[in-house]
Image 1 (tube, rainbow, N blue to C red):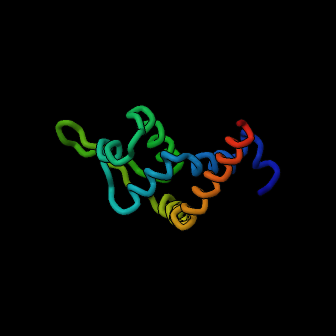
Image 2 (tube, rainbow, N blue to C red):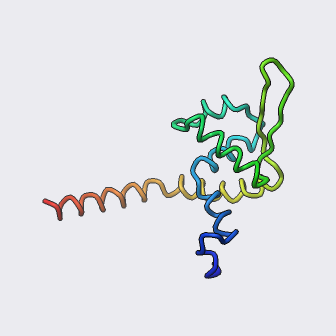
Length: 123
């Protein structure tokens, strides 16, 4: 990574911040295979508020990673789908998800060892 990537206004850092956002990653994974409506996304992502979902969807749309389609119904239906650019990012995110799933046991064991050490030192 180039040194300027650490600057707050660096475009690379701004993109990495988006990729590092847990909600953005979950949304990309969900819309990768099929378009989803707002409420379906909200139900699928446990713990996300309506406001946060709206903000992240707008950011992903602004970045060209998802597209928003308004369907003229009563009430209006809005669905979100992945763009070709978003699909390329989704591939990279899949590799991270695979790593997390493959190494989950080892990470949890490391956390337990760390916590036990900290607790022993505090006692």
